[in-house]
Image (spheres, helix red, strand yellow):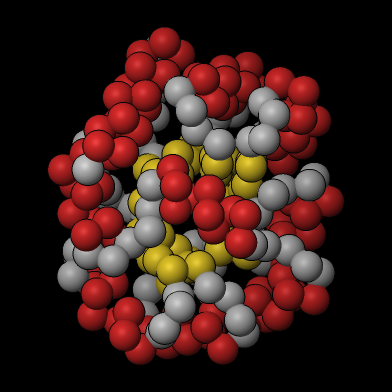
Length: 211
């Protein structure tokens, strides 16, 4: 976990996306990788998700060295096992249950669970997890993490959902206690070319590192 946690902290953003098309998926990963991204969340949001993800992992070591490719929108034990078998570097869920957390610990799966309430965060905290996704972040607002942080010393928070892919919005979340933010459709627009995506992400990373 410590390697992934450090990479996420360094990167400040975690891009997340899904496409039914393997070619589009591969080209998106390539565009993000060329921009300097080394942690990506592919999302389990369609019938091609497992097949596409498995293929991406198969080519990843050769084509995208040092890329940590995780899977998101995992909601149950079976999905967790399927993606662990597909060698996901980490698994992100939109929800948290004691069962999911304990299963991930027993199987040595790196889990970043989705939390909304302090009780959710506590389930992760009591089971030794030290990174949670706050979801949906826009429903909770930018003061939320600072409000609950003192109760959970050592816990790291990654808000996701409704965050704009611009340096001002992201910096406000980081200043509010987040270690990074998850960015989906605000960053990866379907009408973008691969070149446009690479350029946008490069600029964003550059601006974030200047702050």
